Image (cartoon, rainbow, N blue to C red; front, top):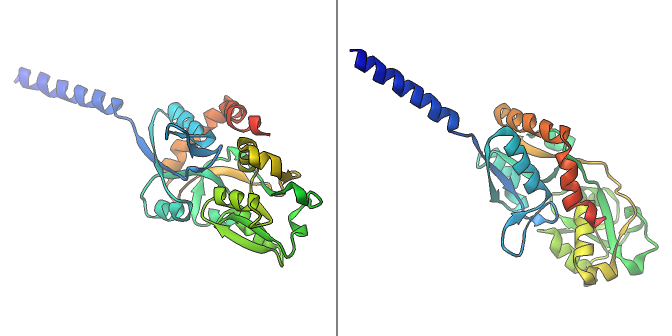
Length: 248
């Protein structure tokens, strides 16, 4: 009987030890078409500011993070359908989005800018693009901003890279996207650097956050508690220096 009790309690202790070692795992969706925020490098590895940030959050929270690539047009539908735990893809926190999903603390402000060809350097803002074709990735804040301006012709794109290509080829007259994305594209490609330009400062103020399914407080608290440490230790600023400020 004593031997049975000893074996029973030993089994309980072993079970508890194994449970402690078992880490929470979060599946995070991203759209790898937004350099320098998230993209695949020449070795087909997922990299970027958001990717590094999410890994730092996971490190602080002592949980495992796994990424899955999802197209932008389907990414929030998948979140609503519980296909993954959260979305990190330079998602702007807006009042409309807050009605249908939860967000982490803001971790970056990345406002929209107008990009044009240098030959149109007399243009300084979107209101001067009346009658002209202006592109943006569909269902983004940039797309919404273009459609607010009467008589500007909005051209939607599946990804922002195609919009830059069309702007360079003179198929459109301008495009709108986040400042970090615009700076990366223009400085990364010598042909863009020679012919394209950003007009002034961002004309929107939009904090970016990690999107979480509405009401999923477990994931929200897990991410926020860890993100709070990342922000306190200014790890996010180090990542900005690595991925963003070199582009400005």
